[in-house]
Amino acid sequence: MIPVADSGCHRPHAAMNTRTPAMQTCRYYVCGLSLALLIFATAGCENRRMENLLQKANEEWVGGRNHSAIEIFKSVLEKSPSGPYTEEALFRLGEIHHFGLGETTQAVTYFQEVAQMTPQGPFAYPAQKYIAEIVEITFQDLEQAIIEYQKLINEFSHAGEQAEHQYRIASIYFKKHDYEQAMVELEILLEEYSESTWAEEALFRMTEILYTLRRCDESRETYSKFRVRYPDSAYTGEIEYIMASCLEDEGKLKLARARYKSLEGTYKYPALLKMKLEGIASRINKGGKSKRKIRRSLRMRKG
Image 1: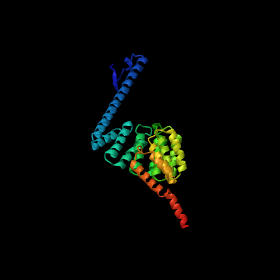
Image 2: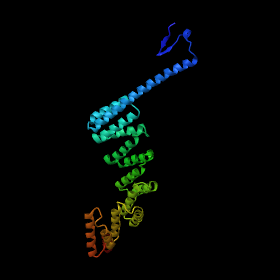
Image 3: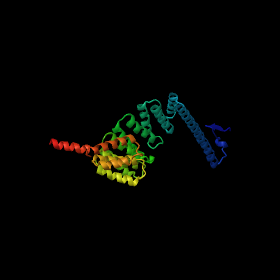
Image 4: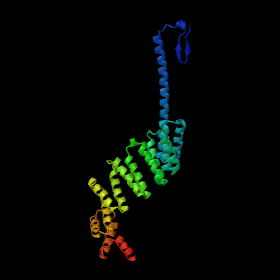
């Protein structure tokens, strides 16, 4: 009796079957292993093909051939509708539309798809960061930008950039002239990320905002903390200028002049410093009264 072939694995006729059960099991195991290796090899070929397509698309983009790159990235999406290759293709499409073509709305659509597809994937965080920056800077939608930066803080703690995003939120409130809320956000930064590189700038901005709000006593308190903690800060000139401005506003013109003069040769805006010193000298020569005091005395006379 001649053995009959079955699906690539030969199975002998019952009359001719002299193999033991152990031998049969081993034979079926080898067949199964061969099939698994075939599947693995096929998957490996497909992976290499996707990687080659992505490499080619990236080369086209780097070479300035945006539309060619877009077509190749889209072919990746057609061949691989899900998975890591899809994420990268979508992310790169967003970058091309944003940086290469200036089509920012379309770019945001791609970035949103990446961020939602695999929240913990390698492209989700940079995609969400692009969204926040575009909404703030390009779209000027400050309320939505706050929401997008807060997502970065809440959902991507592994990135280790929460302090930066917290600072951006505070800056947006400053842009909106909501100085009180900006102070709240900066205080959160100092409380939760006190060791970050953004803490220095946060404390400086708090001093600046308090001066803007004409709360010089509180501004001096944050100034003292700042000088103790950051004695060699790049913001030293600017924060000393704020302290001199407080003295000037309070009518302490000689003290203000001395403080301004201490900045000569180091302050980064020498023309502004010169103007300040000339203005204070003129006011001292006229009797030393601040503009605020003069206005108050005029109201008294009118009363």
